[in-house]
Image 1 (spheres, helix red, strand yellow):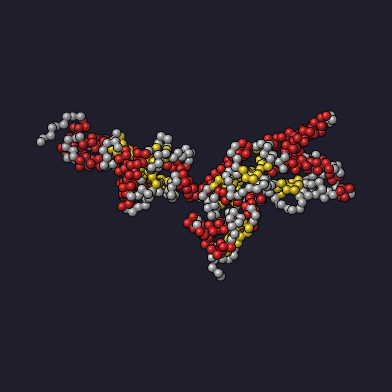
Image 2 (cartoon, rainbow, N blue to C red):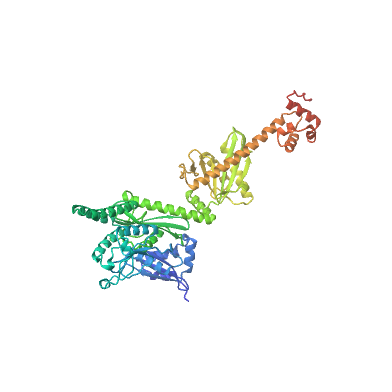
Length: 607
């Protein structure tokens, strides 16, 4: 077999719009794509290797043959791409995760047509409406039609010849008033068809046309003093108006448009579709797509639009989208990005639906697979904070002191966005005297990462400093001394407004107060604060006790340490019996201790 040579293949591909197809060594179709310029698009797979993600690189390695089809316009390429993907379902193309068979409402091609729902689309001349993504809404429409218009439900062949021969008799439906008895010529085909005309208008979303017609009938019947007919028409009008009030009405000026929006995650995307006819949303559907080659939102939405329009047989010439697509519109098809008005409200409605669907689906997936939630959260933090890699390892520093006394620093560690308490550390500050928060931070950061480097441990992807520009600058100074300032990302969080500061940037970053990223950073900061305060209290208490025992004449440092190690606190030393104390200190020391706690004057020390 001849070895694949992409350079030779590229010379055969024209610089025209069209569709390209990739085949593997078994000559199986593995990918279909569209392009404004076929040669440039195909060539990008082979010449921009560094810009490709790992999945796309695998695809490129499997390409053994390239086929292409030239078309006149981008719209043609878009349609052809969709048809080829639907037909062949190539391995590396995105497929809509939506294998349901949706129901239709059908007006059967027969004498006195029946109106019913079905999941089978048969090309027999019958008229199909839908498909309906909501089965409940489909039944509401069908029930309303049956209430408004008496229709036959039997499957008899009501040809003129059979009726004239008297082959059929009216059934219980006639007795109940649900059918007007066309089987015995009690209803003419012309009268039956007039009802069908109204039904077709309702199914096409032209409810205002039917309501206008009913109002005219009421007026005409009232003028003719036919109050019974006027009442029947009024009942129909009320039911139709009640149904219309339950529909999402946007604006009667918007006649026939499709609306699409998208929300995506790392591996999934969700697309919402709204079909609007005569100002009402008559169809809605949200589908899920699983990314195959790290596709962009533009690519995903372009694909989903054609699939959904094909599935729901939409003929709307105007499509509302949230951003520009890589498709140029034509006279027959226009893409609109509304900024305000009723069309913008429609787009916002679609965006709200797709956001809700995405949240529900991702919550479901994360419940089944907690690791998925972790990966999504880390990816969000990486994106929000502009990090070079996923922050699997994060550390946060906090200082504690009271007017410079007993200064300590604490460091907490998060692994995969969760506390790793076994890795928490604290430092007694050694080189700083007095209340100097910046110098304290500088010492803590230096000592922490000096040890990390000495022990050949891995550096974190993100360092969080509790404080503003001053503390951040102090931390950065230590990182520079260690030569690792370019290997890690360090940020500061100022508590008052929760601003995020970056080294060298005078303007802070403000994250949304409800952002998951901000919640994780706040959790880091709060943990560091809690851990640091706890350690500081312990240090302060221990040193306070030691200083009290140190004031007792005759007790040296060694004796004081023995007492605290044995009895744990000054209170227990005071309450301990002499016999127990004599096991630790001498009789003379015991006498001094008792005199001190009794408040007696102590004997002068001999020189």
